[in-house]
Length: 185
Image 1: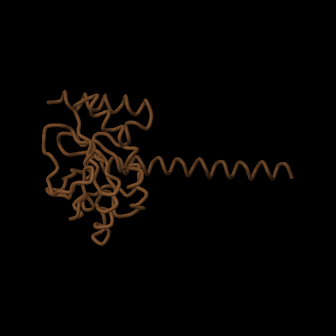
Image 2: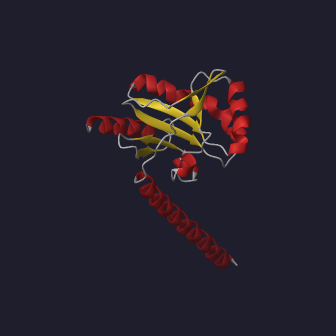
Image 3: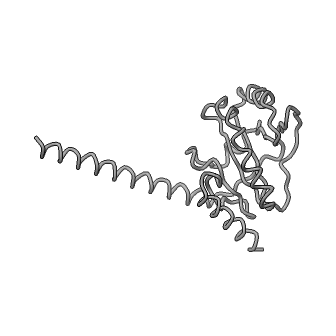
């Protein structure tokens, strides 16, 4: 009986390890494809800041752009509720001063008004863009949530994927990538 349990445990463990390795390879492959993708931001979008609403373009300045993207899939209400957790990225922007955080929702057309209303009600002190033309949905951004926060380099391609405030290692890596990207002029 004990040997059967040991064999069962080894089978389960090897299945887990194989599954993890396949997932890692899948993430690597997706990352390589994503890094080769040029991301074009919407020319015009609805912008909500505090409770004010306007239509504007995303600033096209020389700063690197850190995109936090919310696509049509997933729970919009949950995303809107948790936007307050993104204040830290704006603090990091003030600290470093060389990148611009851009929060973009790219909802299905029938959800645009609901999302706009939800964002207005929360009255966040930072701008939140709503891509009503679904431009970002057509850009090849992977559906996996791991790829929903990324830094666009000067060429418009992702050069960093992940949330820099997830932990200290990510923050250091983010700074290193930003410095490298800015020094490659």
